[in-house]
Image (cartoon, rainbow, N blue to C red):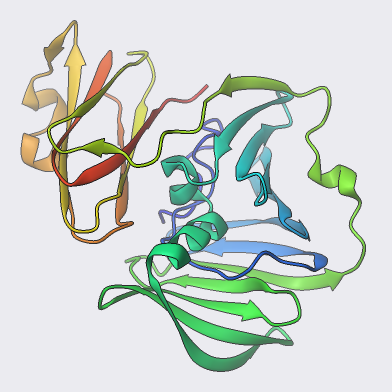
Amino acid sequence: MPWYPHRLSHLALVLAACLLLAGDLSAAEFTGDLIMASTTRNLAGRITVKDSVYRMDIVEGAGTMFIIVNQFTNESYVCNPSGKNYRMIPTKSPASLQNDPFQAARYGDSIGVREYRGQDTINGWACDRYVIRLGPNPIMTEWVASELSFPVRIENMMAADSAYVAVHNISVGTIDTMQLILPADYVLLEEKPAPPPGGVKAGEQQRQQIDPSLPVEVALVNYADGESVCVVELLKDGRPMDETAVGPAAQRTFAFAATGAQTRRIYDVGADAVIVRVTSGEVAVEIVQPQ
């Protein structure tokens, strides 16, 4: 289920990656229960929305986390209450696009085609139904509550595990702004500058040293208007690792046919460096490890 956290300790990759959604910034103030489900996994939480800022509180097992997203400044704060720390990531970064369905939606709406398909009632709310597509391919259906100007359901039409996100038990009312502000005693774990526009272009590569004792997650998003191809290489002591450890090159080569197409892979093979080589097109690359 690619929309949801792989692990709570890996704070950067939080909510699963849907491709695309959504409409204008909400002008409403409300709270609701958040359901993220598929045939393989189910998570529950809460969402709090006030104008262009929202907060998602997620519970998994004994762990909790919350994410504050400012759609005006285009920044997301992934917060760990137990450690009183947070990470800041741009809303258009690969990590955000792959893991926050609402931000993936904004991006998708800007590069895809959004088709109105009529009205439905979802949990008592009158909603406009839209299908988002890239080229001829429908990738997502969303239901935007007219009164809230916010999606209350998103279904990933490309996911094999029938992933969806839904907001229900909605309560409209004044929101305490303090809920949407970073706690003063939280410490920034890692500050990443916003990536430059675009990604790694054909003939270029991105290399990053990593901690060999930790798994590494590689997030890839196609930034090209057409097809892009890239290959992931894992190194140890400056040399490519043997295929018996990392798998054949064919399994580490990724071809994307449409703008915004994306994937992520986790490698736990003791590598101390990762290289992503782009052979055609343009690919945004993010390489992250658990804190």
